[in-house]
Picture 1 (cartoon, rainbow, N blue to C red):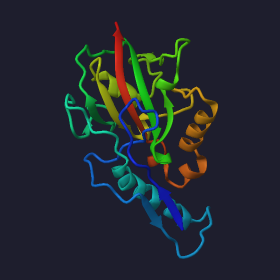
Picture 2 (cartoon, rainbow, N blue to C red):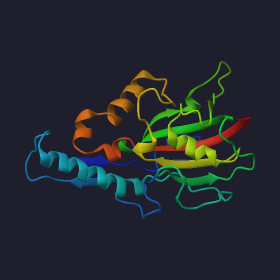
Picture 3 (cartoon, rainbow, N blue to C red):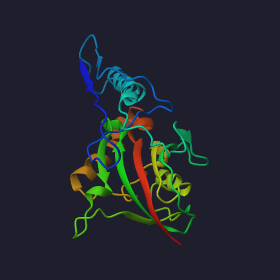
Amino acid sequence: MVVVHSHASSPYLRDPHHTALHYLLRRAPPSPPIIYATSPQPLSSSSPSAASTRRTLLVSIATTSFSSLILSPPSKSATNTEFFDLPNSGGVKALDLRAGTGATPVDGDQVAIHYYGRLAAKQGWRFDSTYDHKDSAGEPIPFVFTLGSGKVISGIESAVRSMQVGGTRRVIIPPSQGYQNTSQEPIPPNFFDRQRLFTTIFNPTRLGNGEGSTLGTLIFDIELISIRH
C-alpha cells in the first residue's frame, strides 16, 4: 500500500513554510488529506506495472492533492481570481495575487524579484526562497537578472515580462519551460536542496518510465521589486 500525504494550506507569500497550490486552472473543492493506492501484489520497481502505478499516483497527486494545497486567496487588488495562460509562454499558467502599480519591464531591463520556488513532483517541496538569502544586516536579498538574457528558466522570464512593479504572481511552469540543465538560474545555494532538485528532475530511470511530463513542473510565487533600464 502506498500512502501519499498532502499538507494543509498556510499563510501568504512571506511565510517560509507554506506549501504549493493546486495544479488546476480553477479551484476545486478540498480533497481528503490522504490518498490511498493499493496493488494486489508487490511490484518490482523495474516492471511495467510498477511504472504504470507510479504514473497513476503522480496523475492522482496532480489532479487531486494539489487542489487542496492552496495558499491564501488573492488579495482584493488582484486583477485575476483564476489561473490563466500567459501568451507565448509555452504553457505557463499564472494567477495574480496582487496587482502592481509600477512599470512593466522589457527585454534588456535588469529586474529584481523575490520568489518562492516549489517542486510539484515532491508534493510542493520548497527548494529555494530569496527570503532565506540574507545580507549582513539580515535583510532578504532579491534575485537580480537581465530579462531576455536566457540565463534564467523561461517560465520565470515569461511571468515577469508582463508584470508591473509591486505585483505578486503565482505561476505553474511546465517542464519544457523549467530547468533544462543544472546551470540555469535561479540555482538553490544550498547544496542538498540543489542536489535533491536536480536528481528529481533529471532522474534517468523515471524519465525512462515516461514521467518526464511531470517531474520538472515548478510552482513559483514571484514579487517584482524593481526595474533598472
